[in-house]
Image (tube, rainbow, N blue to C red):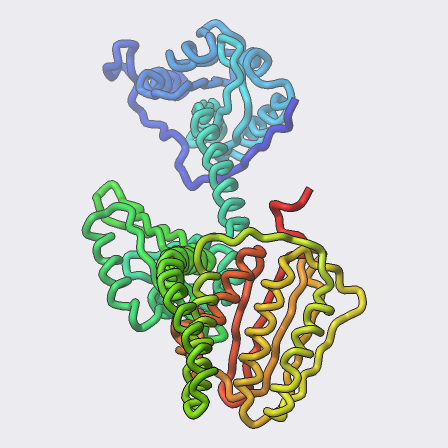
Length: 513
């Protein structure tokens, strides 16, 4: 049996007044006055007819008065003994508490209230609020005790459901990665879920009481303000995207789903906002766009390459033939052959971008691949006064890869680093194990760096920061790394240098057992 909770309240309510007017059973005032006790009884009989909640009046003389609501709820009648109702309808653990409150009200003359459990006439357990009203203090002592029974079962059930619902929403808000935000009709923030710290970088107290557009990117402010106004006009869910500033000054894209809480009068009282960090989604969208672009360019490149390569072969052959017979034009032939070789190189790069290549993955030592690349470009580095420093740990696992393609990536990146160091310096090539299933290789130069606005365009076809570049080398490298299910990332600072980070899985996923 569960333990009952009793609530004791002392209310500033007057006891039932005693007037010199007596009432007959018809409800009309009697002409001849009787003694005060009889008058009190007639008043109580009259009052009981109009009380809608169950009412039990103990006259403290072995008699009692109950109204119809009491009879309908508990099945009592006028002939029941005063103590019977406690034995018959009170939950056993509650009986002593009820008796104690009864005696307290009787001895102090004060109104007492408690909540307890009681059985109705069908045997169902109800949650009841009992009010004990001492009556007749005007006569010098308590003449009767009126007990009002209010059924609060539904109210307590709804309160429990509400509490459970609030708990669920609290758990949801506290454990969701999305930021839950409450905004008033003026746009001021009144609540933020704890995820604001991890997703936004600020504690919630940084925002409470401030306007929710305070940290919005200046370019997004008017748009967000217009969407907020539209929300109040339409009174329905509104969805929009804005950028918010993080503590480091970086702008992070968020999606806001704002839903109004409308009062019965039709006014918006609060706005519930679910704010989602969509940085990863935005990055994925960019990758998808670039992949689609790469696919289109690849198909175009394949067609162009094949169309160029056939006449190019003929031109190279005739140049070689003429060169042997016209020695006086040797210098011109050298220039022509160099340019034709350059065209042939570009065509070869374009072909890499065409249809997917058949890859033959084998386990290879990445340090050995890098050593061969460094050996190949060592002379070029010396001519540029560049020192190449390779830092590879001994426990680096072998990579399952297409050796020639990975070698091509390393050549492109190291060559770029050398060409970006016109005044010499050092180039560090660092390799490390990333977790247990990937290897990270970094190419770090001390060149002039790349402006931030140009970094985003690197990898576009024919976009280059070099005087004689084609822009295809980095694009080809990107494709090869993606074919190996890896990633390539570039970071740079002007007058400091550039770092290119390549992450390659030890074993591509679809090849794992």
